[in-house]
Length: 114
Image 1 (cartoon, rainbow, N blue to C red):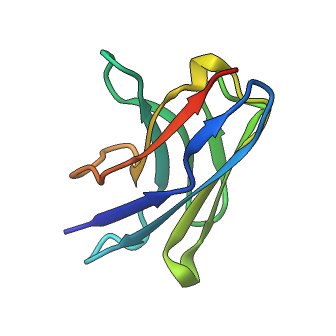
Image 2 (spheres, one colour):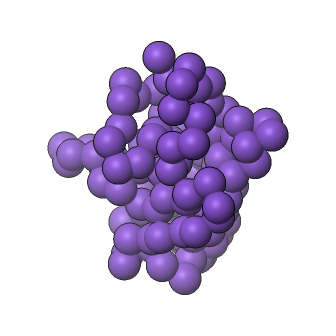
């Protein structure tokens, strides 16, 4: 059973930055790609970015060039550096395995507003 604990969200003005962190505990699938997802009010979960064990990254078109995903496997942690934030980035952000997420954690709220 995989568990995720996300942190680092908050209220930020447009153009600002946030760094999200997620610690995860893996039972057997320790080599899974890890991703960040988000869910805006009234919408389904959306994949934002993922990173493989070897460091290969991929991003949704809407965040490419602004967000950077990374992982520290020694600490079972995955990060999401978010720059140049826009109001449309407002959502609850989750980390999970990619491409098949398991049970969701509590997420961390990101609100971009002036």
